[in-house]
Image (cartoon, rainbow, N blue to C red; front, side):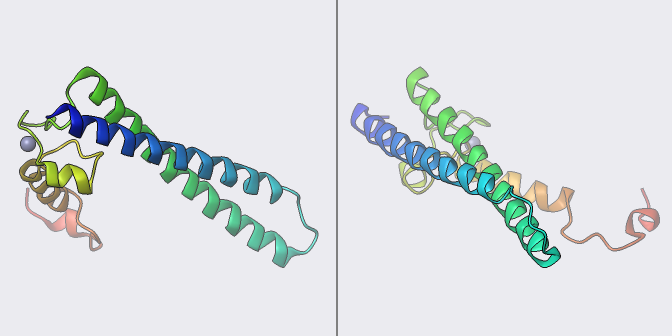
Length: 133
Ligand SMILES: [Zn+2]
């Protein structure tokens, strides 16, 4: 990959990471505020819901941050833009859309197909019992 492209990805990822860290900081403060227990049971329920929601959001954010950090590390050690599965270069177009991509489009499609096979969305009850091995 060209130096210029790497630099633009580095800038893009760094900015995204900074945004996420600011968001995470905000979320953390909001969770803290809702920690105050309320005497009203209805309030308690909605507080709980809000806290759960925020925690889930934070979980997603922190996972995204890890991915961005990994991508930045790859830029530093020169492996950015290479497919982790087959070692081929990931298409620049794909990276522009998803800078955190670690797989080329072919390996990604293969992985998704495997996931679909391995984890059916809604396993019907008893299906594993009656499927002949
Ligand atoms: Zn690949």
